[in-house]
Image 1 (cartoon, rainbow, N blue to C red):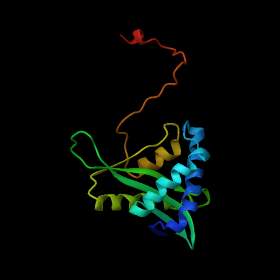
Image 2: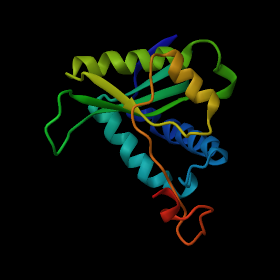
Image 3: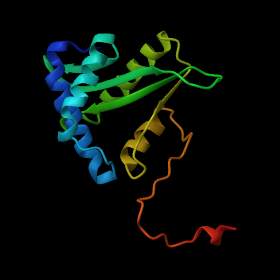
Image 4: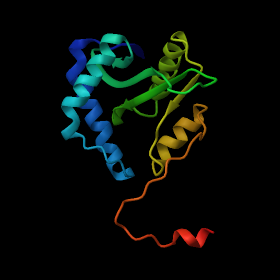
Length: 162
């Protein structure tokens, strides 16, 4: 495995892989629209490339996976410096060989060098395979995000909980 910083010449490939990632998340309830966000993600991934916060896994000269990450700030005082893994993707033909774990390990090492104490990431609740992968890598539930579509009648009333 060759995990290295991405190059600007690989930006189109990174965007294509991000679209694949976002497309795979649709069945799990993601609201992200892959094609409609291509330009936005091109800009964000370009920023990651320039600042060294996107790593790629190459097989020969082909990029088969990537991870993007960043150190995050906080508007309130906290007791730990946080980092965020914003995207992790390995092309389907290359999964199951430890590539995702290697990308994640490399991102964590980079974040540690940037002074990060804890790393956070998001995973869709219904994506059991991804949740299992992250659990195997030592990640545990930390916060729950709840969602409700507005204008849809709930089966329980708020006063039923009083």
